Image 1 (tube, rainbow, N blue to C red):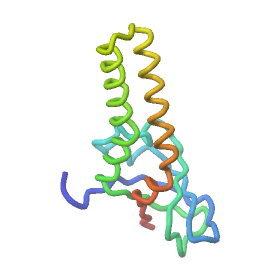
Image 2: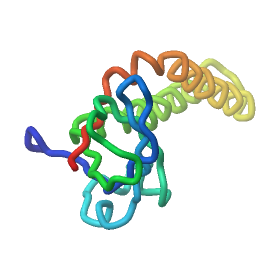
Image 3: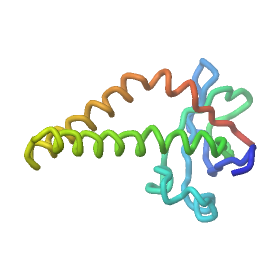
Length: 138
């Protein structure tokens, strides 16, 4: 991965808020077809996503834009959303099985651990949000 590589999606500005942010509807399609991260990117699963972009000065609703994000931030998002919960699931299952719990109990403990993991991620969403920065190209 080279420094400065970005993930980009075509989008349309849906609305501008008074605090300098814009709601941009990402149109997944042509931008996703050439992206090597599309197999793990949640934006590739659906045709439409709404993204909040900071520093939206000089934008107007209906304007076509390109939303970009550094590739390293995309990998961070995959790690937070998929890799960490998977590690929690596997660790909880193996740990509870080694401790003597049955398969059903181990499965329930593992699913509960993943639910707690996602709850902690949800509680941390404001801090996590500060680490992700979408940029707009007009």
